Every structure is written in structure tokens, then in C-alpha cells.
Length: 236
Image 1 (cartoon, rainbow, N blue to C red):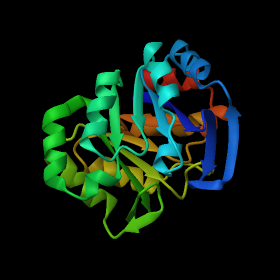
Image 2: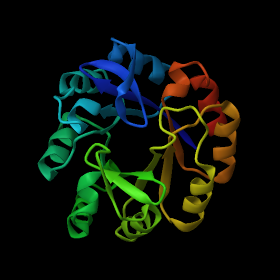
Image 3: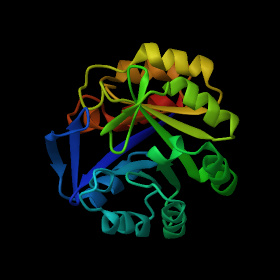
Image 4: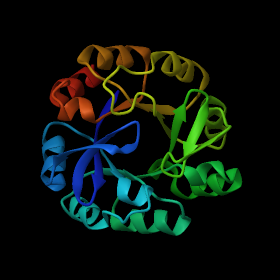
């Protein structure tokens, strides 16, 4: 299981929100490049970078991203990527994997084209509340089942799907194990889970369940999970 640290950016700062609420924002670092380098030194094979500014339509953090790529940080990048041209630009920049959300649910024929073009370099993020999917920076809910969408995307040949429980995200209240169990049993592709993971015991449980990957954010910054230890768990 791959353990991926998350760097969420607003105005060049590493922040964490609670359930996507910008009014509940906490700043953890003003030096995202140095934090990313430390993650790689501690065993990260990918660093999940989210441009919250772009996702929320309040600017972007592309200069930070460029600095990371220039420093050979293996970046999985998402946040506000809603056009094919943007995907192309990011790949040309040197981003290892692009994460898209909103655009994946509007036109499945377009997604098929993107999967055929980019293969391993593309992931779709399915952010959910109960049995509905959130889009447009979590501002809107659409009446689509996250599991059903994942099955369709898997049939199109998509290699990676990232599931984020919005109700758990940034809360440290524990992962959504009921959903995770269901997804692993029903969706036939590489699944990465995010939201609420709060202890090394949960990391071990997710590894045992057969998750391809997990994304850790607040749990690392708050000292609830030692990242190096989590990486070792994932390697076993």
C-alpha cells in the first residue's frame, strides 16, 4: 500500500480545512517546498498537492508547484483542473499524476479520451457525502453514487480513483471503513482513500483490507501519525 502525504495550498501556505470549510482553516507551514522535500526524504513515493486556491476560484499556487517539480518532488496534483489543456500543461511541466474531479462527471466520452491519452498519469477524485458526489470545489452536490461512478470509470480503463469522505476530511474522526470495505469489494481498479484517517492502527487496517493507497494530511501535521512509520506499514 502506498502512503501519500498531502500538501493543501492556499496563497503559498500549507493549510488544512475541516470538511472543506475555508472558515475552519489552520495554517501549518509557510515553506511547502521544504515540507515536500522532508516527505520524500522520509519515504514518500508521491506527494499529493492540492491547489485549494484554484479549486475555490481564488487564485492559484502554480509557482509553488513549479518549484517542487524543479526540485524533483514526485507530485500528484489536483485542484481546479477542469480542461484538457491544463492537464497537458501540467504533464509538460513534469507533474507525475494529474487528479481531476468535476470534469470527470460531466462527459464520460471525454474521460475515455483522457484515459487513452494519459493512462497512468491520470486519476479521478470522487469526493462524497453519504451517497452523493461533491463537485466544483465541494460547493455543489450531484445525485450520483460514488460507487456507481467508480465502476463506470473502471470500465473505461481508469487506473486510479481517489475517494475522499468529506464528512471525515480534516476531522481526525477515523476513516469511513463501511464505505472503504464496499468500494474495495465492488470496484476493480487501484483505489486510494482519504479523509479522517487518524492513527497508525487505522493505517494497518487499511493495508490489511487491500487498499492500494491512502492519503494522510492533518494526522501527520498534528502528530497523530508518524509518516515514516506509516510508510513502513504500507511496505509490509
